[in-house]
Image (cartoon, rainbow, N blue to C red; front, side):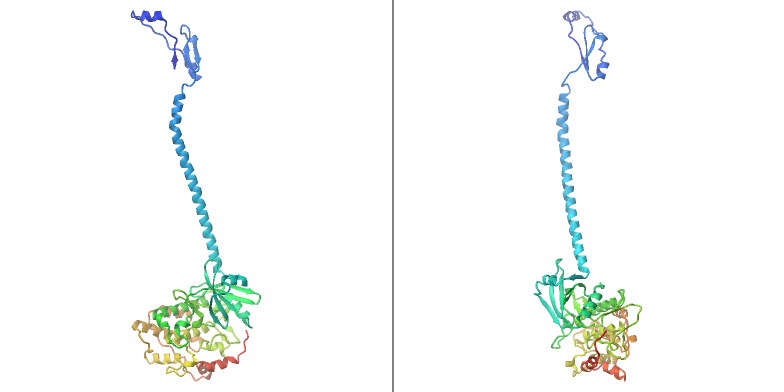
Length: 441
């Protein structure tokens, strides 16, 4: 900080003879305050102190600082840049994943609600109607696939009189139903005279092919009685939902094995709502002037002129007939079986159980025998002549899920009433009584 002038030679010589030389430090406070150096001029008095600037004095120190701090700062900036790149890439990837997730949800949600398709859409979905999987009086069913990989069954309806009412019934009924045991209506087509219904595809087809076949040989043995029991319970839950679980009560009016479809796990789903009726829950029944349903499953009040009022108990009757067909492995009203030793199967079942005799089932253990008996008793309770004597489907579900032994109901066939006898007669007789009723609504 201090800089002085050279010492004269005579003074140095004097120092050899023990002279002591001293001088005062220059007064550099003023220079230091200005950031400058100072020195003495002349004889070293304060008045001769001079301030001056020494360039590049701190250059080495500053260079060393830069050498030390440069790599640290560079590393820090590199870390910040890396973090920024990672965050941008990760956030962009997450945003894309969220967009894909939302897109998939919207596609799936759209599939949950009935969508209106054009005929051109159906051609695309079914690959020009290439894969036919079924055919009946209602039309032809084709297998198809939606853009979101959902497999569907497209039912092209025949263009005949009355088709419009059945089409409206089915779309109106199915559009408000969401239940595990009811087939889901994915969409519909009303493109000019072309009409179609698009359902979820159910791999194992209808229940009837597992109960009986064209040659009368039972195929349901492959399912086992445990699975058949679960199927019956699932159907009961589905019908109970139609009767109690919707805003309006829905009467199916055509419950039968052919209208029960099975998914890949053999879970049952009720389908075909072309005959369905909707009415408020607070209303006990509805008036009908024409029979609806399939011979062998129609409740007496549906086809009889003496009743003219039907309720959800009509479905209970049809379900009871379905149960007895599961037990017997044959159609209750099959004309080809009229001369068999069992005669009219539901009545034969009642008589056997009423006498506490078994139902002549082969290769069943005690547990399975109890299942068969419960299926039979529930079926007999459901086919009672008067609707008031039939249980609700909610009670049927409780009977299936309960462990108690069921009590035999009253005989649904014991009556001298001629009209009642006609309802349990062979199908040819019952069919003639239906032919004279004109179709109106």
